[in-house]
Amino acid sequence: MKKILIILGVLFLFTLSSCSKKELIIVTTTSLDNSGLLEYIIPSFEEEYGIFVKIVALGTGAALEMGEMGEADILLVHAYDSEVEFVNNGYGEKRHNIMYNDFIILGPASLDSDTLEEALALIVTKPLNFYSRGDDSGTNKKELSIWEQYGYDVSTFGDWYHETGQGMGSTLTMTSLSRYYTLSDRGTYLSMKNNLDLVIAYENRNELKNQYGVIKVNPDLHNRNEEYADLFYDWIIRDDVQDLIATYVMYDEQLFYPNAGE
Amino acid sequence: MILESTIKAFELLFSFDKEIYSIIFLSLTISILATTVASFFGTIFGIFISISDYKLKRLTKKIVFTLMGIPPVVLGLIVLLFITGPFDGMNLLFTKSAMFIAQTLLVLPIITGNIIISSEKTQKRVLETATTLGASKFDKIILLIKEIKPFIMMSVILGFSRALSEVGAVMLVGGNIKNDTRVMTTYIALNNSMGEYSVSIAMGMILLFIAFILHTLLAKFRGDFYD
Image 1 (cartoon, rainbow over the protein chains, first blue to last red):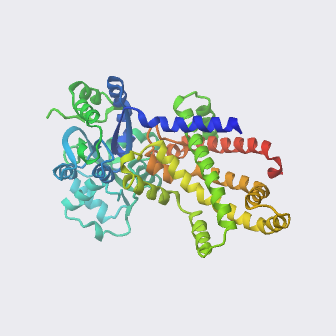
Image 2: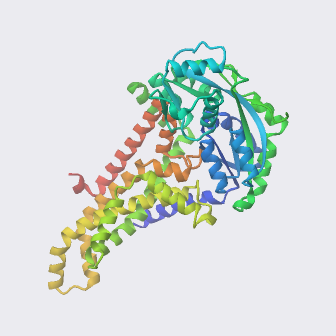
Image 3: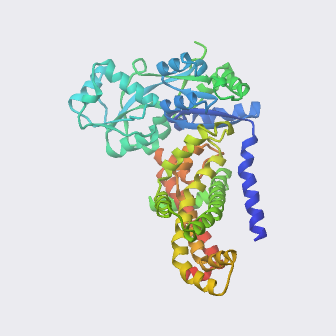
């Protein structure tokens, strides 16, 4: 009995020991997390400053919500308008561009379209089954804004328009299994390419730009440790780290284009 | 796929990858701790509810039985509300402690409920005899605990299985953070979302294998229960 108690005591201490470390909480999007970029660059930050980075992946909407609740130090998200609004409302102290790539429409076959307008028209008129994220994520916001931009009202769409309510990885897997179409960021697609039976149905970097930003959450909201957040904010827009981002390659393709300097 | 996953499971187990081992270790640690604490309080609550007689007893029992089936994700949500609300200052969100709290609360009603049922079945016979023999109230409770020992054992096994297998609550309050709060079930959920099904199945096999080993160990202590 005594032995069991000792073992339990040790286990308990082990569990609690995680509380006292120097740590930084970054809430990010599922698309960025699934792309593997953070695992590629974050270790060099941890090494440089000796700070343990905790990465939590949620949709951009949920990530901003966590920021408003003061549960995060740094947000890495991709929904420009919402980000600016977040800062203007006093939840974020500052925001900066860090990098971009693009969104692509994926499906079982190419849409053979020259413009985005043509591609969308093809999906609607045929109609082709389409998976929307439907989770208020950055990708979801982008998708909704594209429909709106070309004069479509999503609420009038028929049975062919489905909302998965799941992260980018899950949605891509579902798209591949059911042979539907979906909008995804290129990063997640490339990182999962081997497990997917999908092709790029439409791509155009100018029409479908995917801008990522870093936000330092207002530290007054929650008495968070401001120092680590500042260190990270300055670190990710520093020249050598920006160069490091550019070296992240998958299947011979560069995933992210740093643009903090612009 | 099945063969591939089996091979993958052995690869994972014998890869000596520190990450895999720490995931398995964390899963077991949190589930064991949560089950232990929940068993202690669950047994006390269960026996207390079953032997006392009060006005709202039926209601209490209904609530406990309802909570036995609470979806882990709903419980996680309730814990999330509390640790970001009234207990905000403790910085519990996305920590192992939060996962421990959630699992303890998840297992507590399961153990309490089972103890209530078994104790009510047993107590009439036991307590009548004890009273004729002139036992004190404390003696009676000790006697009752001794009588329902196998059922306590069963509740603990049920509770532990629930804790080890749940994914919704630990995902929500733990955040599935790599090298920190990632456990076997959230690891599986992550790999599912990435379409890495063979890795998922491999980890699932390891989880089942570990559960089997634990039951084998338990059978050594209480062989009668497994006969």
